[in-house]
Image: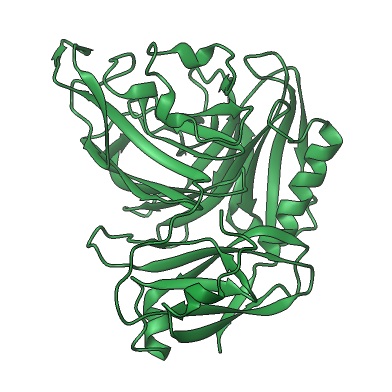
Length: 405
């Protein structure tokens, strides 16, 4: 929205300045690279920094930024901004700030996260009757809610960038689905408003493009136990919150209390993050009870080719499928990116390809992504898909570093 504009008069409103060096020494060209700064790290070096009044400049160009309040205490925890970096490039960006709070800067919205449920009606058995949808930032899932309850719009929370959208079913299915997009506009706010499941039909914006069924869909989280992949189905309580809903980064957090599996109970936290300009969802899991594994996967389709990264790669690896596997009967690629050090084994069941992974001190993270041939200006061939997979591996293996000047 503000790229390339003359911001020199604006700088008078932000007289203080600090500099951050952003270093892409070992990585490939990066466009729309997301940089995350911790507020506590900034204040440790610049005690008078005010996160409520700042702009970020790359030379004379204002960079899009946002602040994240991760613990809902109305205090900024992170600054997130976006910049371009060529291979091997290191450059300084300047954060200009004021001691007086200012109206937040407004930027074009390129990510979104939401959850919407009905109010004003009531459950009759397990179906919600009457009422209207309302977006909320937090939901404790009521015990009456199950699949096809028509209580939550499109059955769960959704998140999107301009390239792709996702949702997961906030019920016993707990599997992730894909919204293929033919536009760069944000679309989730309109889905399910004109008929609960109208998004299964092709429209100007796109459609729900994945048949999930009882599979792991794409990137769903669970546990390999008793010789099969188990999704998070039986719990004592589930809470879901929109943690961040910003112009360039959005995030959803879900807490599963008392996940029952194989005679044991676990508390599981999942955090899903999507960035502008990206198809990737970053999934971070934290679990109690020190389980032997967690797992994720991709639904199996006979009409696909399987692609795997080289076993020689010591860092990040991928497992991907590509072929006519969308509900529109066109080309769709799906991929899981995981750390080689986390992999216990690759396996499968009747419905899904499964990556069985080892949590480290109760923590595990991985990425997943979908690539649809009808995406606007997107990837349309299998060879382009493979190039994309390898490019993401190079970026994950060589993250950008930052240093305060």
